[in-house]
Amino acid sequence: MAYLILHEGGTGEIEEKKSRFIATIRPVTTEEEARNFVDEMKKQYWDARHNCYAFILGENADIMRFSDDGEPGGTAGKPILEVLSGSGVRNICCVVTRYFGGTLLGTGGLVRAYTDATKAGLDNCVIARRIPGVRMKIRVSYSDIGKVLFFLEERKMKQESSDYAEDVCVEVLISAEVKDRFVKELTEATAGRCELEELGRQEFDEIVL
Image (tube, rainbow, N blue to C red; front, side):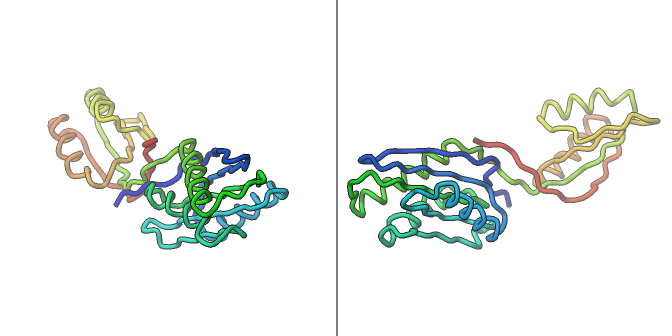
């Protein structure tokens, strides 16, 4: 099953009653990696009042953690986690740094601020869909390679490699769910003059935002 991942991290910042909220978001794949990132942000923003965070790991959100880092319970880490969870993105960690502006925001104000900062950070990230894929090898004669390349280009399927020898061999990575249709349509397009071989399963990422 396809799922969303963080392809490229980003940052976002908001200000609320002179308090600055800086969201830094990064892709992570393990809990250790997420906690190392949190420590890195705490060192970078050592003079900030709070460095609150949340992270989600695994295709099915198997691991979810958050911390209020001294803010009133439920006003920081949980709102960050709820934004991340609502986005559907996995393998993601967000640290929201707060520089206190001298005015108390109250619990409702804190929840809104941490929520809005996280959303601002997400707006500057690159999101991808991780898709279960199949690597296919296509062997075809020189007289039919034009048909094959046109077929791939028309469907926006990217060549992974090509080898021009006695025949032409092209490797492509396609979504597993379209494999049967791919084989049928390419066989028809070349009147059965191509050889198709499945080389293995491999996930790949498709940028969506």
